[in-house]
Amino acid sequence: MSVKTNKSKSKPNDEEPDGLKAIETQIKEYVQKHKQLKRLNQDNIEAVTSFIEEYLQTFVLIGYNYKGDLVTYTGVKSQFEMDAINTGLHRYLVNSSIRTQSPPQLPE
Image (cartoon, rainbow, N blue to C red; front, side, top):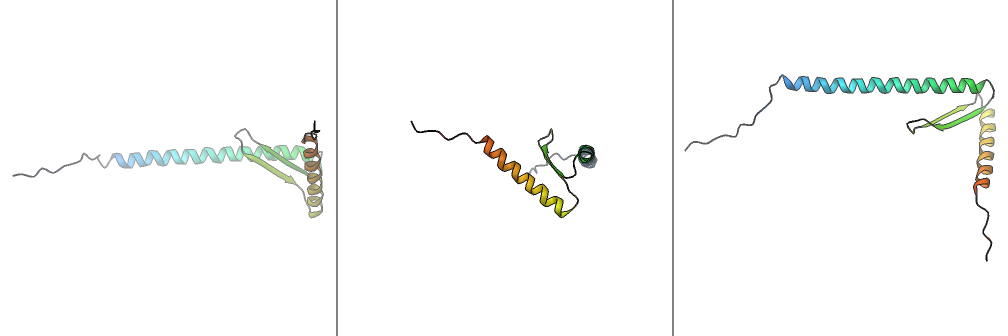
């Protein structure tokens, strides 16, 4: 009685390195594109803040880019300016929350 062995078909060794090289190439391209987009985004933020600095001494920039990522920048040069901007931001948040609250409902 002869015993048959189950031989699985294996890929030649030449194909595995090519597959790994293709994956490695794709990863490198993705990382490079991500670095370029990040740098472009940083350049845009610097351009906007440079423009704002021409008109404002201290400021806070808060927003979202087109991808939905939060973008923040605080333009202060001293602790005094940071305290002033925190006070102004607090006042703004308090005043805007008061404006957005609906008036109380009167009982009928």
